[in-house]
Image (cartoon, rainbow, N blue to C red; front, side):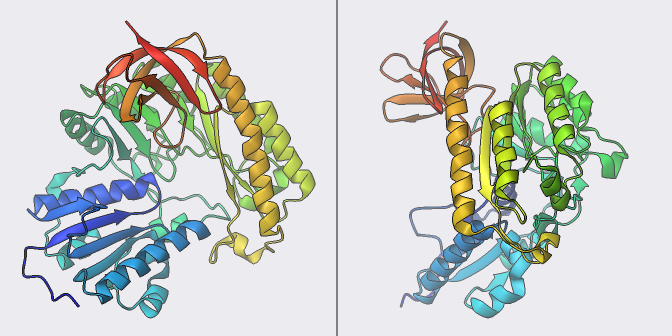
Length: 437
């Protein structure tokens, strides 16, 4: 067994889950760097003697991944490969007593609001003056900007309020300062995230102010794209659509998780909307911003989802033709109101239904992509991979949406630069083109 090192501490942060966890890890690392501590993110060198795991506890698969990651690092600690192991984030917030009992080899567990406590244990002081300054782990040219924490929505299937608490908006002035700092470091694209963008401002300004925030952020020099993720459909502020249409810096893109379309399912989910209201909202989107890409996520296999109700969902997806779509199988989460319902759709059926929806969406995506052939798009290039430079249009978010591939032998583009690309061919999820002047 390796003896404890006498060298200066080096901290490796491992991030699991969504973009909100990425943001939280960046804040943690920014604080550590400000305290002149050595920190890295998901290092492959295995030379850090302290590991911090930022966990996800959203659904079964995410919880399993988090637990497996903790177990791997606990074994490394047991073998003397690391000195200290700390766990933070959503899983730790939700299941701390169980984790302490079942995996006692972790030195300490922290919740989602315990950053000052975690820093203290790591030998660092929490610096309030940093105002959201972070050590970003995304490519230099884009960054997530978390505009609120927590959620006030009562969705029956969702455990996020249990892990993240009530909705708490960050003031516009503070977000502008954070955006200015990011822009000074080369960020060109801001991806706005929260559990619920739609609710932004209600708690501190007593009215929805997402549109006002977009206006102020677009004034930041160096920021060229602003993208919206995770807008709740109920109570969606219509002035945001005007801002998307009229503000050149706001991408013609929105991520709006709709979850289902059947009235009985929506009522049981406590979504506060209906089939007809959802259809009307999407009609407004496409009338006011005709060229906007709409991304959504759906849940299949929710309690009481009969074959008839699933077919209603499937028919609606076919008719609506979302630009982007993801699907989850329903996860029966304890301490949510839906947990009292019978989880009556077998796992095998859930998976088959998810595959049916994604197969349908694959065909829709192919059809929509063929319409892009011959057109010119402004593309932001993210990386080089193999023989291609890979970028995105304003209609695509990193990691989850379509990409534009340009052959590296035909031209050269710098990562983080924009270029106009004419699309020459397209498949189900990728566009292929050449750079034009």
